Image 1 (cartoon, each protein chain N blue to C red):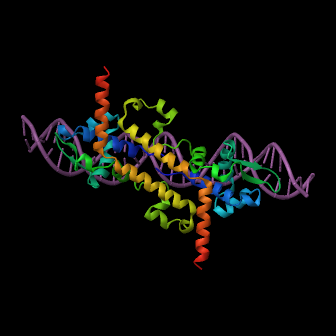
Image 2: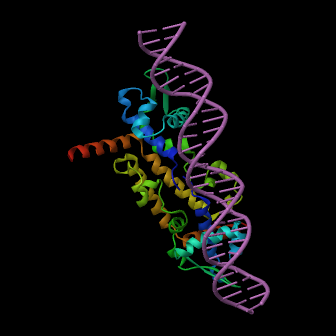
Image 3: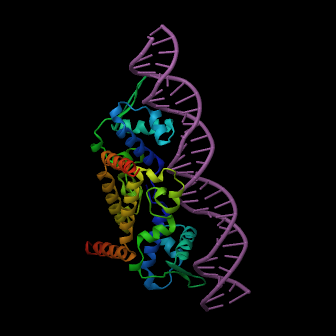
Length: 147
Length: 147
DNA sequence: AGCATAGTTGAGTATTTTTGTCAACAAAAC
DNA sequence: GTTTTGTTGACAAAAATACTCAACTATGCT
């Protein structure tokens, strides 16, 4: 029941983008360096995020990535769904998964998994990149004031 | 972010045990047949559950498994923790996982994962085997009354 | 005692998923 | 036209998952 690195890296990379978007386009190498990730792996994650309309990649010197929506309009849940698929504790509560499970119709536990999955999705959808930026700011201020 | 079959099978097998506990010891073969699972795989799951004190295995003819606590005292969360480990969206919010992540101290996303993991765990801890039994009964009555 | 029925346990294996890397390519700036 | 940067598909190593097998132990029955 773990998030894979895909989801975690994608959220961290997107947060990095949100934190540095005032500086214009953010190149892959900068994100990779700050977040300690592989540049090419980031490229693959951002390809999905670009197709989903969350980021935009600009080629050429001075190029890089930028968010296509305001950080307040991008939720953690959306990012995760893009790179990991539906937020579901079990496959059979997703539209396609349901078709392939013979037990789906009268499975007692399935109802539970569906309810919990929906609650989990709601939690993740309520948190936006802006919220995470605010947390990062708090964190920074706290470390300064404690000096 | 999926539950593995370990967790799902364990919950289904434990529910099967709860539903049939009035009939005395429930042999592995019966659970396997009803739930469509491999008997030997069930054996391995129940070995963990036995060590955790949730079930008891009785050998010999007429043997089988039985719950060691009342269904109302066994939560789905507990079952999952026994067979899958801590309920956590990311490894770094567990006690051991935290030690192995250099970023743990000042990671902004980690706080989010911790909060969501705790909420998820609470949800799963609130649901007991008895609750699932009640759902199964409802299901059965509904199918009878609709005839 | 001896046989049949069950659970116990450790080792091993096949499959799938995850987590990347590599190399060739495309576009844009200068 | 060269350099910088993103794009894309193919591929591969590693880890996790989902089992199976075989030998063993305990118990009840006749």
